Image 1 (cartoon, rainbow, N blue to C red):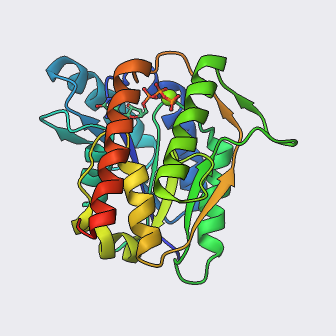
Image 2 (cartoon, protein in one colour; image 1 turned 180 degrees about the vertical axis):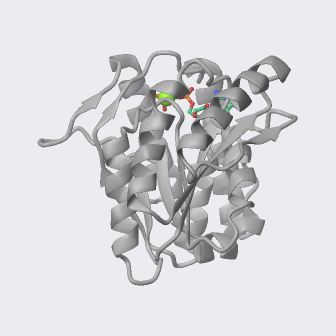
Length: 246
Ligand SMILES: Nc1nc2c(ncn2[C@@H]2O[C@H](COP(=O)(O)OP(=O)(O)OP(=O)(O)O)[C@@H](O)[C@H]2O)c(=O)[nH]1
Ligand SMILES: [Mg+2]
């Protein structure tokens, strides 16, 4: 059976995760072949204690939910995802989904099923927030507009025809990831831009899959501080790529 190692990066998520993780685990359990790992991204002792209690309670009901990985330092979203992926064992697919449920469980199921349909894991699947007929994307206007500016910047600066590189649900063939892992430098919110470009440059196809998506209150990304850092990181990716170095 195709195996998927699904990481949930969590920074101060004990208040939001209850609305998402139990339902996610119930469905992943039903699908089979998926193990779910919460990576707590160094949010401090109190928060980690709360998360541990929650996860231990749920893992009694859902064997697909592993013991959480508690990072002592805050590594950033990318750092948390990569730390989780390093525990994948022999899984054919490495995946992550944000903790808040903005990417709904039915879309996680759909993408996992799409991955499982590939005879051998070959093409990475990136969820994408495309406002189009037949899809429902609920996002605050200011976040939507800033997201469009960022996506255009990524697409133009890196010469990659991507619509939305930042959506919080992605599945990557483990072999394709292993081939580029050493070249990856970015651990913040732009990590998936770097990952996408590295995969493409290494010959791995990446498909964007439009999904339903809903803004969930309580997001901790700061529009000004994090957008600036992400733009700076895209510039760094472009420079390293032009020089042909990792
Ligand atoms: N802010 C933040 N989030 C982190 C960090 N490490 C992991 N994450 C996780 O990254 C995911 C995305 O963060 P969110 O706070 O949902 O981001 P947001 O502001 O809602 O942004 P969008 O969902 O893209 O609109 C969540 O699962 C976070 O818990 C970190 O260091 N800082
Ligand atoms: Mg969010």
